[in-house]
Amino acid sequence: MIKKAEIAHRIYVDEEVKQKFVDVALKDYFNPQKAFCEVVAQGVVLPTIKQVNEEDVGYFKGGVVDANGKFVEASANRRKDLGGSMFEAYPFEADEVDVVPEEVVYGGILVNHFGHFLMESTNRLWFWVENSDKDLGVVFLMPKKQKVIRQFWEFMDLLGIKRDKVYLIHKPTRFAKVYVPSPSHVLGLSYGEKFLVPFQAIRDKVKGRGENKIYLSRTKFKGGTVCLGEKYIEKLFYKNGYKILYPEQLSLKEQIEYLKDAKEIVGVIGTATHLIVFAQKGVKSVILSRCDYPIEEQDILHQAVDADWYEVGANLNPFPVDHSTGPTLLGISSSLYQYCQDQRLKADASLVGYVKKSDGKAFVKDYMKRYTQQTYNHRLAKIDPLIARRLLVVSKAFIPLKRLVKQTIKALHNKKKKI
Image (cartoon, rainbow, N blue to C red; front, side, top):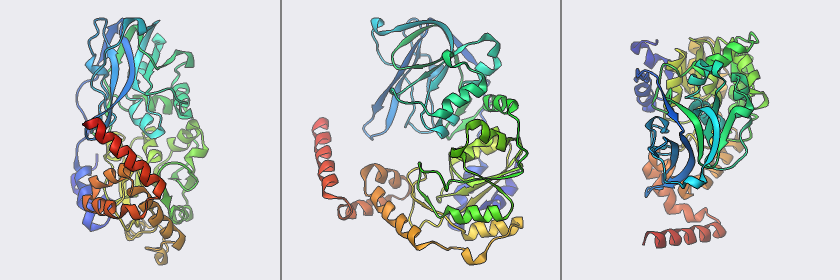
């Protein structure tokens, strides 16, 4: 466990924002509550129904109810914030219910995003691992019918769960028995004693590749948050002997093979850096931040694996940015250069603060396009309300007439609904 006195020395970011990172790193995220499993005979599993409150925050209803229709509290989906959470069931008709005469483990909501799947849709599978001899099925809630990400099936295969024992439900379904394990992790809030169980079970089955130092690159990743300028960072670590991995070009098994033996893992914060759950305890984890505030989820993972961690500001963003929305302008920042100096890594001083002209233009264009939209502007408002408000004032200058008309019609429609 990292000593409190050391924490500030492990954080390489601009002084103006450093205290935010320190405060988050100082928290103790371990939840000491003992894991448990509630057994529900003739339980009905309800697929999620999305709800939106007056603040335009989306959450769900669904989960497990017992034979009497009472909501099973252990089946709730908790997050640090309301968005994406689920705390209650909903009424349904008895003749709507499918019946499956199987015993299943409740897996919760299947989030169709690899990073969130990894952190949220696996947190009850500890019970399946510890009872794998029972050949239980696993049931997940699907917000809607959609193609499931490939990593989901890869994860099930690696864990040893047969595909024909996986139930992705879209309508109320009664099972002979539903095992509802307590969640081992709450996104952005805590982790429990069973959190690493499914990840370590998979890790134990995979043969490592003996790689020592790994850099997880996003430079070939076409989806997700726009990250400009990372190629200079990638080149820096390549010249210092790091194996460059492009996770999206590898199967999940191959990713784990590389990470299993690694003594050091470096990467721009995101889904790829969450893969340290498959690494060895005490692994050195160097997180390159892409915005000016910490992401608590990564701090939770560092504590869970007892990582030898460092947080390094690698963004050159001229404006405040939401982590999930982007865009992000990366490069050899003064913070990254100082980290390299302290770790005796070779870094070109002439590249400190360098931004390629085309990357700078692309950043500004994408930034204005995104944050002049209401949805993304709301996200920015949580970080910098003043900038967000000013952007809305000038937003009409950046919105095409067609989209402006569409937004006006939508606003009028919403106003009528409230009346």
